[in-house]
Length: 610
Image 1 (tube, one colour):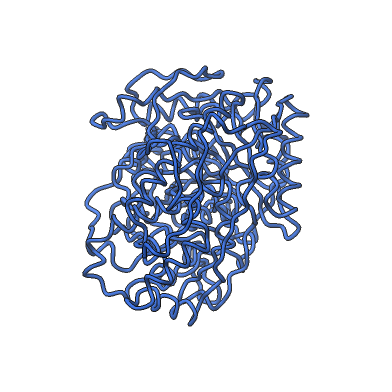
Image 2 (image 1 turned 90 degrees about the vertical axis):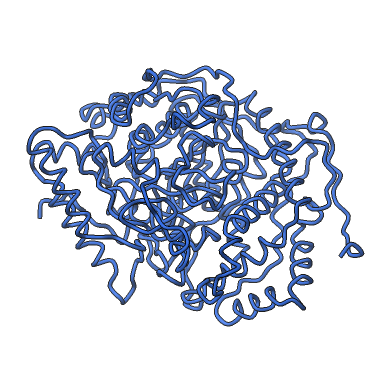
């Protein structure tokens, strides 16, 4: 369709772009031109996109109307493409930390991370009385050590709770698959270790759920589909799962997710819609919907997800838990479905930042045979003893971007920043971060191209009836991107990384809300077909793309609630390999907020004595 070619933007050189607070750069809001569709409408739309007569023209119009042509496809850029955001180590100064010798085992790293935490007495001094608190890894470990409860007792409560949550009236749909017999076998082995006084680590007997995008025996890995596990069998644990298992963790099953990770709602027509424990009529977010919801509901203190476009941090924020996405390459990707090679990362969902640190200790670090190990710096753990231990943190904030959210989120996150200044003297510096919408579109083009390419050989033989309708639409759009568009997107990746590194020369971290909206209602017409809601989708991913597209570490921390009682998260984005600093900042943010955390509507207390 060369005769229909649109005019593309001519981007000026990076060094000509003013990143200061008074920059004349215009903030472009998301220009989504696509109505919400579900039910019969999404079926018709999928049929039209797949038709040889109408499909190409409709896809062209969609790309043009949503500014992909103008900002990406036909843009003129001077930068070279950056295909993989694997960062060199530039030797950033590290804050107060626990030093880590090289070549420690996961068990040794977990012990080192645990040594960096407060004692129970220190924790009680800072938070003498909490209105609500999820049980932590150390809570489980202490109860097991004292013989008050055993892993078998907890496992039995967990199994009963999952069955309870699956009742037909309004199923929570937390899991795609869980195996009570396997869970009890693991719990029995852990119980015997505690009886002998020989637990492997503080993770021994702790329940951990795994997103169904990560290999974990004895389960198939479906990626939220009805077919992918048939053509790609799971033959061994993913590297991150092996490391958790070596620490004695009980792996309790595969959590629900948006089909192929191709959506933000967590609505899955095959395995049910994961519901938000704070309000079961609302979404949990996606694509790691089940992982966020099980932590929120108290079923597990920890779950793993995969974050390709905010897919850990977004549902974490909507469900009021912590979501940590490390630097690209920090956690091995071995055994994870190859749906997004250069933007996806294993992430951690927990009730507290301390638990995130422990699990980060267990699963971080290269595989010795991995080539990326040559550029990866050492893993450092922050000393989480006192949140006020540093007074010189600078937070970069782009006001127009920060405020592009609902009023409740804007006010709540602004108040959170005020707390950081009042408690620790941390200053917020105003900056301009250009071309944010351009990066969102370039990321969408990249993740879509990588997803469709990774499963292309299977799609040729697939009965399309096995795909959800919203996934069929997504794959039609993903398959419409060409090599020039992909190359331009990678040039934009290089350009954006240069902008971010210039910002990091002035500030330690970048701060934003985690999402632009809180959890929105689930509509009945979407349950069997999925839904297309690109307007809400763009608002949910608004602040999260840099973490994926640029491979930067990022973390979300719960900081409050909207007028409907739905959780709000604040996000911190760090320099490459700066997880230690990022976790310290998140810990400092959690400290003044944790006393106001609220119990969800759906919650299971697995350590109660009844």
